[in-house]
Each structure stands twice: as C-alpha cells, then as structure tokens.
Image (tube, rainbow, N blue to C red; front, side, top):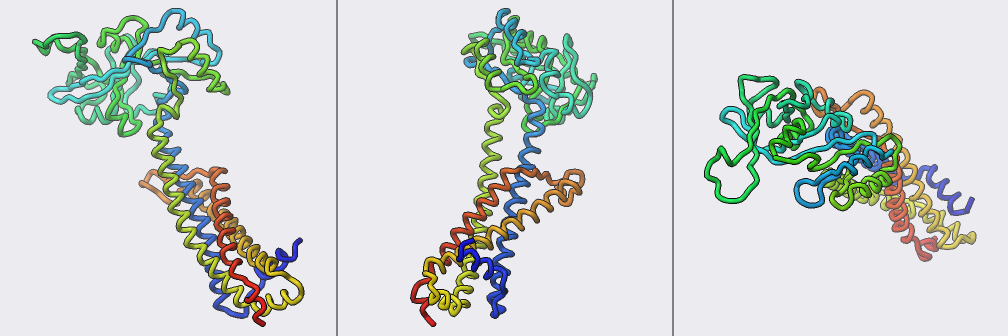
Length: 401
C-alpha cells in the first residue's frame, strides 16, 4: 500500500478535534449518499415507466413488419408465399390491409384506420390480452373490433344491434363527384369487441376481417398493405430480416419492434437523458460540499502536513493524501447510496409503497447498467472534486510551521 493512500485511510477514519469540521464532513458524505441514491431511484423509475409504456404497444407489435416501399399496397406472388412458408426463421405471419376510413353510428361519425387481418393474426400478436369487452372477430363475417376511444366517441357498444355501424371509403377514380352514393364504398358492420391499448391507438384503429377490408377497398387477391411476422424463439433477428428481405425484395421495408415505435423510443430516451443531466447537476452542487470539507481538513491538519513534509514527504505526496481521501469518501458514499436505493426499489416492487392510482403502483425496474451509470458518475465527480481541493496544497502552506 502506498504511503499517501495509507495516510488518507487514517484521515478518513479519524475525527478532527474541531467539531465544525466533523459536521461539514458528515454533511458532505450524506450529500453524496443521498445524491447517488436519488439518481439510481430516478433512473430505475424511468426504466419502469419505459417498460410500462412499451408494454401495451408491444402486445400488438409483431417481431417484424414488412411495409410497402412505395404506394399503399404491394402484391404477394405465389412464389413469395411458398418461400415464406418454407422459411425456418418464421413461426407464423399475417397479411394485413390498412386504410383510412370514415366510421359512423347513427348521427355520429369519425375518421379511423381499418386494419384488415387474416386468421393468423392472433398467433402473430397477443391481441386477446388487450380486448376489454367482448371477443375477437370471426373471419368470413362483417364483425369488427373497435378501439375504446372510437367506441366511446360514437356511443356504440358490443353486439349493439340497435345502432347501425357503417364504414365508408372513397372510391378510387377520377372526375367530378356527382353523388355521395357513388363516391363511397360502404359496408355495414357489427362491433363484437372493444380493445384498450393506449389513447392514440384506441382513437385510431378498427380491426376487421381481411376479406371485408379487401372488398371495401377493391383490392385484388394477394394485394396487401403489409405483412406482420412472429419469429421463432432464439432466432437471430438480423438474419431473419435479411432472409425475408431477400424473398420480398425492394417492394417492402422491414421494421422491427423498436423501429415501429421509433418516435416513442426517442421520446423516452430523451426524457431519461434529461432527468439524468438534471440530477447530475444536483450531484455537482453536492460535491461542492466535498471540496469544502477537504479544504477545511487541509487547513485543520496544517501542522501534521508540515511534519510529514519535514520528514521527507513531497508536496505531490501530500496532495495525493487528500486526493485519495476525497475519492474514497465519494466512492464509499456512492456505494452506500446505491445500497440504500436498491433496498428502496426492491421494497417498491414488493410492497407497492408509492401508488400512481389506487390500483396502479409506480413502476420501477432494476437495471445493471444503471448501477454502472450512477457509480461512474459519482466516481468521476468525486475524483474531480478531490483534485480541485488537493491542488490547493502548496509548498508555502506545508512549510507554515
């Protein structure tokens, strides 16, 4: 063990004869502990919120989605279908038709997006878990499953035959519209279920059988808007993506779950970074106490430092003593703070100490990377604070006695 480190440990364990300096030191250590604990708890809280926010959207997001590269739709050939069926990476896939529609009930109407899906859709995503009322639709029918927002806005429920539900889509073509009857393709529908995912999707989507959507939009056989894939377990996503792209070619763009929600991911990551920077600023302010504490210790131990200097210790060695002392104070305080924060987050997960609503606890997630982020932040700030304080030691100071 080096001489400066040995002396630094002695100084860290020993008390000063001046109670004011002891009090300042305790305040500095407590500030480091609370700062480290607060930063970890906040990062764990945001990790929990991120998981909670993505939970519902991920329930209906496929592992991969092939979207048309140009226009609104593309054609699947029989050769494409055979190759996709033979691909070992794919567990199953669903053909999808999407388009903007007008949906009305009695004297109310709203814009929505119809999502026509085939019989494999329930195997691709866990759609049953988000249906609040009713059941999933049957193929070869005019049944639909609407979002909670659409159902509420149009005041229709499940299997409410007293209220006619109509879906309108403008007919393709050119020229002047002479009659509203000839301007739209129309189907009558029956709502058999209401889903709840999030506010945006609840107000946007209506699920329907793919044949209903195909007839409504005058699509041809094997003309689709997209294909949604569920991959087999432990399959390499990048390899599967390359294999599917090789089959479908340039007519599609393949996106994974994160790319489908890129705006949401960017927003959550930006908020997480902003909170980290804000709490790091609070930590910087707390480390001013560490600097002040070290400077007070230096002044308190001027006589001891003079003795060490006269015994042969260099100014550089004496600076290292207080550099090591401040660094140890910061690291130990950071580890204690992480321990306290870990206990609090575990208690929150186990006993729901903090509630958002009477039935919903504040979500937290313990992540290994957050340990490293907090520990690295505390260590770097501690080293900087110790360096700032230790450079105050000069030859003139230690020769003062």
